[in-house]
Image (cartoon, rainbow, N blue to C red; front, side, top):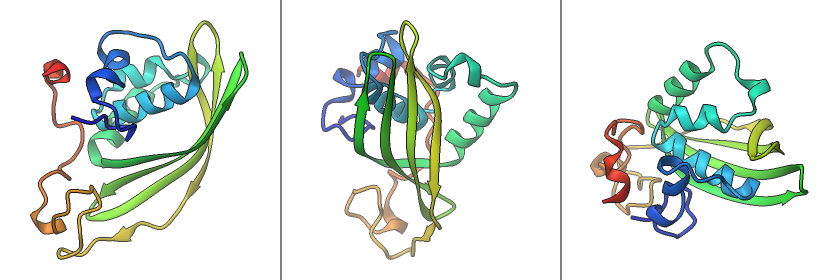
Amino acid sequence: MNCYCCSGIAFTECCAPYLSLGEIASNCEILMRSRFSAFCLADTAYLVATLHPSQRTTGIADEITTFAQDVHFCHLAIKSAAQTSEQGQVSFAAYFLHEHKLDVIEEVSDFVYDGRWYYKSGQLQKSEPKKIGRNDSCPCGSGKKFKQCLTHQLSGQLTDKTYLFR
């Protein structure tokens, strides 16, 4: 199975080692990609662990879990990535389905290095969601009509993490 982060690499060779084996991302783009995969899997523990400690507010884990379980992420497009030894930025667009609408989050994310890379903050550009008709092609890329596609089920429904290395 290809990785959720749209790298074109198998999940077991791309983001799975960060999510389940505790490997540390070597740069901010890899961290961004692994965080996207973590959102796809509703892996709140990983998302909180890679969030800069200054941003870990009360209730953030619940907010992350609720969002990740309410939507289905279907595509990540990295627009640019740059970093120095202490900070980095990744510009991306994350496409997701929510209530039969295709939505996109475009963000320029700021990362900091403090013994490892952390997501610190982001400048968000939100757009209006696009309603998907029952007979429209599913935006997940399956090639099926939206009404016939099963791959757009909500993210986070798999709670057994043993599937990571099947």
